[in-house]
Length: 177
Image (cartoon, rainbow, N blue to C red):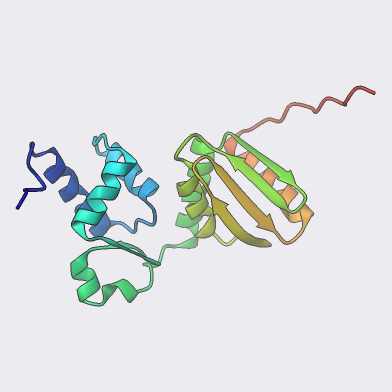
């Protein structure tokens, strides 16, 4: 049988850290987990992280990733831990300041552009915050689509993002006739 840790201790240390993060913090996406690992000094690619998750037997649940032991103990069905509204809003504002490049309303939609791999954490923070008239969120790699009940609600949210993120919009040029 092949030792999955052969070739050095980097994989073992990284996988131990993945388990530590998942046990200590609700992690809802691989992008979030990549961010945690990178902040802790681990240089890892998404395919390597996917392989680590598979090797560790981690499962994704509505409350985030869980270990096989948590699954066996029935902890996967637990609701996500309570996080105060102020904390969720502060996290969202911090992510908007740090990650949003542009935000533009188009009819009842808002399209947010972020750096590569930053859209999922921002979309997750938006989903966890009660935003009036928000119907749904789709987060890609560097783009988030938000559907609002009305065009006015979309325009108001885009303006709020501009204020929080410090984005100034240059005046639009009129098309030549």
